[in-house]
Image (tube, rainbow, N blue to C red):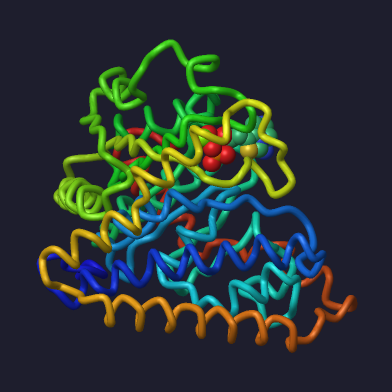
Length: 344
Ligand SMILES: Cc1ncc(C[n+]2csc(CCOP(=O)(O)OP(=O)(O)O)c2C)c(N)n1
Ligand SMILES: [Mg+2]
């Protein structure tokens, strides 16, 4: 069953809270990073919350997602807990990857989060591999591969989408078009206006959605998931969105104006717009909204405290989890591929 049914008032409040949680998580990460409390490198997604929450809200617990270097929103939206995610960013043992991964490598197989991928484009073949697993095992789950607009100029993205389309795999490709790839503006990198048009070259449906509208994203991904599970193959969705922060924390952003950023915040903010809609439709009142806001602040206060108090990893364990166990049913996969006419 999908995480959210956005016909239900309760689930609409949950979707709003989840977007607020992601916003608060990242605002606080930005502060803690500036204070040198969080090591490494962080990429934030404020402004893009409706894509993560709308898309992951259409998924069942058994479904998987793969993500990019900008993964906090996808991780929280899929169901990772804010405290263990924060601890991972702090490099602590209690983090999802024992503090070895940090912001750009967080993964939790139990929650269906197959991993943030700092190699641009890598989320797409990884998600396609997950979908191939579901297909070969005849299992009833699917995957979403999130990727950025910039990643669609990378070869592995096309190779993977082509295979997924040709083999009819149960996957939805969600391109978050936030209009920038590091400091490169969209039209310096692409000769088409809408990345959804790429879908025609693979013979799969391509859809454009307002990435600032959580319910529109959710509707479209719900339909695409149904197609995937019915054996009708992948869908490519382009969500038009915008990131408020620089490419990374510390980016001086010479490639865009402050006015542009302010206009998106003022006119197109996914949380403010959803708040107004739910107020207008009587799903929340101001007091309920305040309670939701306070509850996410409390949750993130606790997550930061948890991360600060957690132990450092033991250097003795540095080589644990480096090598994977062999997959025991690899022979069974070979048999199935041979029966399908390939895989020698
Ligand atoms: C293969 C590869 N090339 C280059 C980089 C450096 N790099 C990191 S993020 C990024 C831009 C990605 O843009 P996009 O896919 O639009 O994602 P966004 O940052 O906008 O979320 C680049 C070029 C990388 N990490 N991996
Ligand atoms: Mg981008």
